[in-house]
Image (cartoon, rainbow, N blue to C red; front, side, top):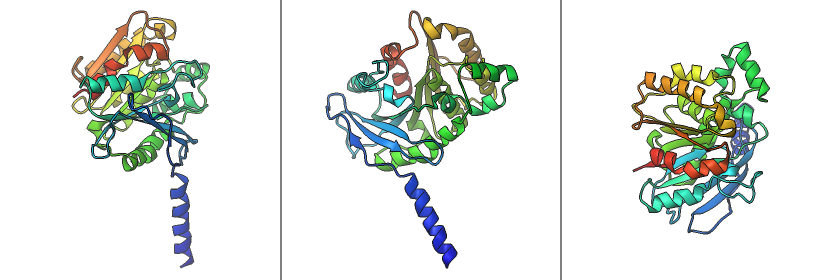
Length: 296
């Protein structure tokens, strides 16, 4: 009897440990939707972090919504609070596209990064299979112990179930998407490859393939999800850090073709002349991947 009681107590403790706080409403301006924040969202896999949820104008619990999970969540909605005073402007762009009837009803989940951003966003399996030279290149970029598999478990096993319980979502793969930039692009294409039954599309802006000297591209060769049920978007600019990306992106594009992806149908790669590596640049073109993933 004591063993049973101890087991029940243990389950209750573990369950309680991953229950987030009540959301705090950050914005109430229904012209561009509203943002709710879950601060210090707990996890059994990674350190706690804030999670922002954007709800579109006219949000109703009588509807069902697709869900877009975005990395670097603190950079999405409010440039007055970001480290570089820039933002993606996701709330404004999503609102405009919804009003124009170009995308389906969708909520956006912004997952904040932490001081371990590079370790959480560097795809773990390709890193572990990397050559000594590739690992040296990753270390030179400041990447320590890679824990991205735990980060993805947090999203798939903890965050997504919570979002699906808390909001009126469409839970299936065809309604669940990812988006990120730079190393956020890496973790997005890694996530859709590791969890193809969970995610139906990924948008990877200014993907930082040079991390590990292209080791993630080697991984994609064997692990890209089926083009029958998935959409993948890539892009890159030509200035600042983005100036490094074209040769790597061309290698990734070849793997997409070999897997059977068709440009313009279930895959897009775009080059933006003059665009640099910043939220300001991503905000100017984010409507393109949004329509590609979420278009009606």
